[in-house]
Length: 360
Length: 261
Image 1 (tube, rainbow over the protein chains, first blue to last red):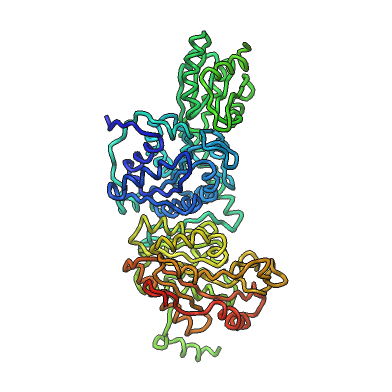
Image 2 (cartoon, rainbow over the protein chains, first blue to last red; image 1 turned 180 degrees about the vertical axis):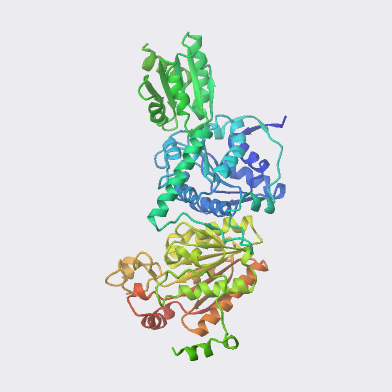
């Protein structure tokens, strides 16, 4: 068993990054995730593992520092919250185009605009449908506990290097700010330069006599070449969809009604399932862990079993569109959401289930 | 040329110059008469002469030199517009023993990338910025740049740059020289053999600074021409540069070994 600690989600992800052998973090403060960079700075990871931590002049600069380090094969990450993530979208699109690994944490707050500093899930579309310009996808992981904030760092880096694609950890203000018990993995050392060069033969690490120069770019002036690149990227996304779907089921085996939720909404919805079952409603919860790739096959399968699906999100209804696509009209799919930093109660979710699907 | 005469001139014992292997054989995409080719050449020559190819990581910008990685035979990354100093920061911080440079134009460095430039300089990042200033956006077709001279005509200042409406040309090099994070700041040109030699010497000094881990950033502005954008012949453009650009952007060292001159 690893070391047990009581930590905020924002602290857990920073500690986990140091222990996972991450090479660099570049960030810029924004509520509700400033504890990430504060924790890093206080921990002096340079002394612990040699990890670099730098406060950039902007979110734009921070993501481009990640680009530079990643293009040289380093495990680099950044974090921000919604308005700051919008600024990072330029760099994220370039990383997707240049096929660079890297991890971006979004501790989502309410929007649009400056919005609120309170928790929200209003960035689902931005995270899963592109967000920046061009046809690209991020792998999107949605932690629903402080433990998953810690565990998903390693998972995110493994996936991002496996597919040479940026990975977003789409968290929210609840998960970032709340304190929970977290089991921390034993530290692993950062890769040596030799290991990095072996594992990332594509990286710009300086051209030795024996190989061609490595170039990292997202530019193809020839449209035929760019289309080939687009086709290659799309094939990669289809491969990710085929191999990397992750979800968790709670009381789904005999469920007649399904709640779907991720992140903190899923935590709240677990309680709603228990309340509903105490009232005699056979409810279950399907929690997507990967938002892209979306567990559409599992949703489609469950649509043959349950009478209806209630989507619960802290937004106006974003994932509900993916659910409806997966269900393809087989059963009713409704949405219950709160916005602007308001958090739904377990009881109001049960009420929404009764009113919108059961007909109470 | 007479074949016999040609063979006589290009004989082994008369060879005084060969192209560095750090330039690829790709035909340059730059307009005939442009200074980029010369700037590329001397930068690559210095890296070659110092045996640094295996340790060099360069950053190409957005602009005319966006394809610099096609011509420079070193590992290179291509940056989003203006972000090259942020990329270089990410590289140099995680690979402190590599030689890292950015190669940027005036629109890239002095407009959209002003924040990245100033802050990389101010943090004293230990890399080299080569800044090509031709006072115009060349690649996009000759629009006004932050460094366009007062009164100068471009496609977005067709009646000449009116400083009351469009602001003043930005002297980035003087500006960054004021920052404690810069170690070597100079302004050069590559329009004559003498200037090419001076610029190459400056590049050599900047590379040596970085390799010997001198504290701070080296910043080399190369005032250059844009005969296409300025709508002149190459010779006219060079003369115009001497007559108009140099008075506003005077050549010479501004800061050496961390000390302003």
